[in-house]
Structures are given as structure tokens and as C-alpha cells.
Picture (cartoon, rainbow, N blue to C red):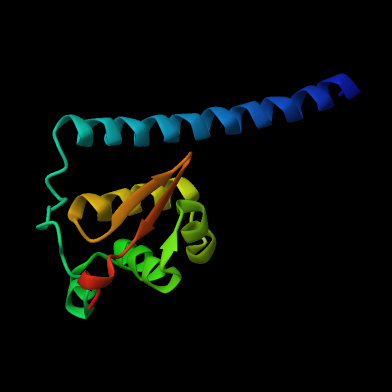
Length: 125
């Protein structure tokens, strides 16, 4: 085998890995698009001043509970700050935070380009 054949093989392996990863991402994106088309029936909307008490936290799925508890601990935080605490991707935390806002558990305030998430003091239990 010549050195060019050996060098040519490694980039091909890398490109093949990239292709496989892109296929996986495309599959996940298709699922997300379908969920959006048909509406998220799994997201329940709660009346606006929903309390974020122990029973409410226990009734949440684990992934949302972790995000909600982190916001409670931090008081007021961006998706970046929450992601640093939970060790999850910022995009994932942003989605969870916005879901909690839609559900009525958190409030969202924009300041410039940053969005801050927080629990209103009166509704915190």
C-alpha cells in the first residue's frame, strides 16, 4: 500500500462517520418536525400564576424538574447559566426553559439579546 492510499483512507473514514452522524441528526429533526406539525399534545398548559411547589416539581418529568430546580436555585438565569449547572447543552436547556414558560411555571424577560428565566416570588411555594 502506498502512503497516499493510507492517507486517503483516514479522511474517507472521517467522512463516513460524518455522514452517519448527519443521517442520525436528520432522523431526529424529522421527528421534531412531525411533533410540531401535529402539535405537542404532551405539553399541558397550566393557568398563568402556576405555583412551583414540591408537589408540582414531583409531578414533572425528570428533565424539566432538573431545569426548574436549577432556576429556583439561581433565582434568575439565562439558558447558558442553567446549562452550565445542569451540564446539558444550551439548546436543550433553552427548549426546556421555554417549555416551562409555556406551561406557566416560569417567566421570561428579554434584556437586549439575552433572555432571563425566573420564578415569580409570589408563586414560588
